[in-house]
Image 1 (tube, rainbow, N blue to C red):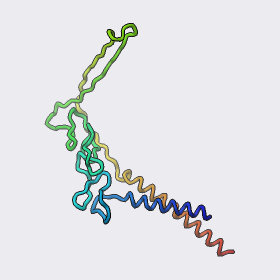
Image 2: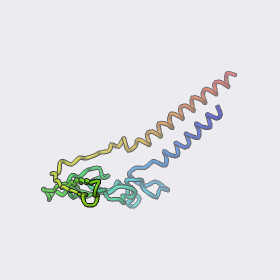
Image 3: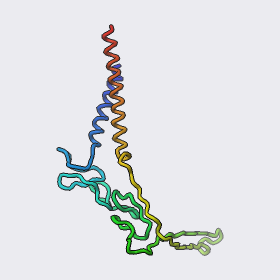
Image 4: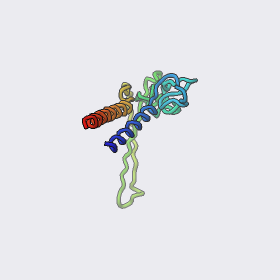
Length: 170
């Protein structure tokens, strides 16, 4: 019983500290907190979501190529993608260029018979696709940790009740 009890207590304490360390939300910073979490930026004493077109710690990273919008969750299907607004609406004839490479070599004379053919194809931009990550998925780690901590706490409580009953019956 004592080894199991010590193990369960250790796991519970570790889980409680990890849950406290992961508690991040938009809003006023609490006492002692210096930085905002990933995806938030500190403005005065308040943590706010990154502006459209930026992501990361302190919103310091612009969206990667072909992605734009809040949390960089929207995809562009055009030749130029603005990190905040996406495809340029003024350029109605925007096209996306694809290049295909075909390389063939001859065994007898590799240098002379090598050829590279590049074809450029164009495709009209299609509708933009939005990828939204539900809030439930963002908090999945926290939910799992809290659930495990609760289960371990209940198991510890049941073990303690069993031990108390065992000693009181003796």
